[in-house]
Every structure is written in C-alpha cells, then in structure tokens.
Image 1: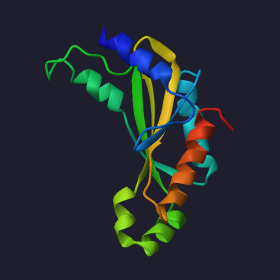
Image 2 (image 1 turned 120 degrees about the vertical axis):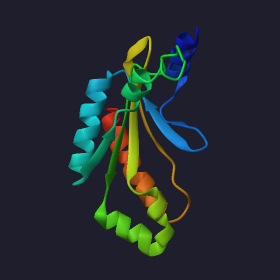
Image 3 (image 1 turned 135 degrees about the vertical axis):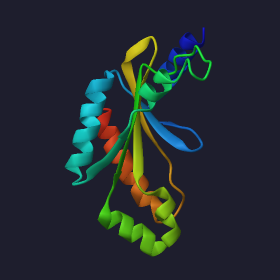
Image 4 (image 1 turned 45 degrees about the horizontal axis):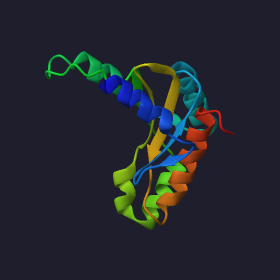
Length: 147
C-alpha cells in the first residue's frame, strides 16, 4: 500500500513542483537517462562532480537492519558539486554561505514507476544564494530534458 502511495505521489509532481524548500521536475525518462543528463549538465557548466551519494542503495541495504519492510526508492542518488567562481562570489557576500556548499541535486525513481524519474534540489535563501539556485535549476532542467 505504501509503495502505491509513493508512486502516486511521485506521479502528481508537476514541472516544476515547488515545496517550501525544494524544486523538483518529474520526467518520463528512466533513472539512468536522467543521471546521464545530470552528469552531462554538471560537466557542461565546467564543474566537477565531487561525490555521488547512493542514498537509495544505502536505504535498501539497511532496510531489514532497522526493522522496516518499506521500499522507499527504486533508485536514488544525490550528486554533489561546487563552483569555485560562484562559491567565492556568494561567500564574499556572506562567509556563512559556506553552509550551502557543496551544492546537491538528487535523482530518484519510486517503486512501481521506474520510468518516471524525479530530479530536484533544495531552494536557496534570498540574496546572493539565488544565483546558485539559478545554476541548480539550469542543471536540473537540463537533466530532466526540459530545455
């Protein structure tokens, strides 16, 4: 039942869906296609992928260990990267913007909907960090095939 609910919720996401603290784009593409698009979009911006967190694999691997029978994701990864130029700019505006670096974009598919990937990112606060948010949006839209 929970699997169907998660799949139904994923299907309701509009382009772009804006929760209070994130922007997401639903695609008709599978996970691997969106990941390829995301990696390409990051590299096309002249950026380097610092780390890929395989969140979905970790949650599945530890599911029984924590006493759960709920499969949350078919696949789910978080890509972390940074921009030296943009990071310097936003941290010169406010050194405490360090808390947002590196920047992350996630890709996920849900049980029962492996060909409908969701790609998104956390929104940034008003001010200098909106430029980072614009970069994240450009990359996420490209990964979702929306530009």
